[in-house]
Image (cartoon, rainbow, N blue to C red; front, side, top):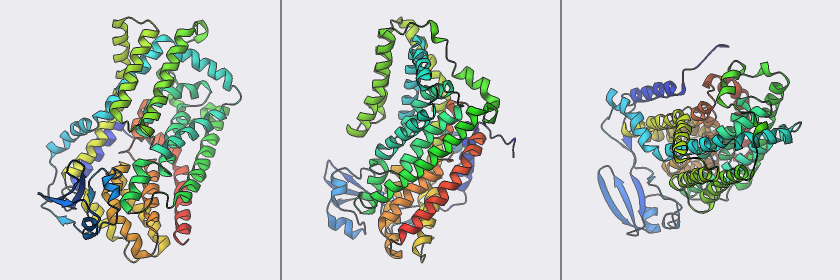
Length: 497
């Protein structure tokens, strides 16, 4: 077990895709009817098997379908994806996926995930251009001097800041951009790359797990459950503070151990490989002039603008990617790099993150197989039957486990919310707990499994630093167990309040 080493991220995902393909041969096919709102016609569209029915966009239509959601949630755009209609699950003819479907799934996944893939590649190009100037090396060298003796503040600050992004606007996929930027900072502070990955990834994971005002999980799930998103808010704030504190303490303990004795690092045998990957040039000879400072300012402002755009301006991947492309071009002008050098540097920088981009696409391919094989709704249907007759505390715990399992197949938080919440939320009524409990179990279940979920972002995150999944599991398991215990206790107690 000590020398256990997982295959590469790509291989792991191909194995998972193969296993899911086999599942489509054994799990019965089935599908719920779906309901969506068409703003152009001000009508509901009910898709029932191959039949499309138009319904009046009224509360009466929703009540007739046993959907306990205010009609305003649809008409004002809060619920913008098709939702499953309770009680409409139908078994269908099996649609087992063939070997050809299996080998096509990564390609389909890459196409479906093209938005985030292009974001990652453009960010890689941007970082390549900035590194060409030497501004990044000079800035990190100065930062290391400033942090000397106070390196622990870096861990606290980065983890907390990323968690705030996660809890407010679902800061997740965007964190990929920060790994190649911040890992050199942690290395300069005499930590290992695992500390940098942990601060960024766990900060995002804890923030999204304990989302407070995140429109892509808390708000959309609450809307789909038929409750106000503020219901249960104080409990989620408490969980955020509790889990974030536990996580920061855990990272600090590991980081201190590595700093005092580098051989204690779980990736000690990779220190030379990682040092070459994130090589910092000798910055003593670099003239940190106004051009380099302006280039860094443009670089920093591009991330600030991205955060403002996503959280306030309804931006998504196209807008974010455009910002980073424009920033790369501006930096090229500022540092006075020739057109040929700019193109070569940009392409090389994008190529450095190509492996990460492919991992994201291949992971999406697993979801493609599930959807094409018509087994996603079947798993949801049988999962919703498990909780019948349970007491309150057990219900909350089991729902968390169910959502953890479902997140393997449906890693998207917004997708999970609209697909499952109309089915799962009414189960709370049958056991006598508030529907906010189901919303919480949805968030905590997804968040806990997200820490180790290979169909999520962890493999892509680790790939940036060339860290094997087995090393991550060894690092995260103690924290993973503690967070599970804490979550189940808090859920059991709050279920009776």
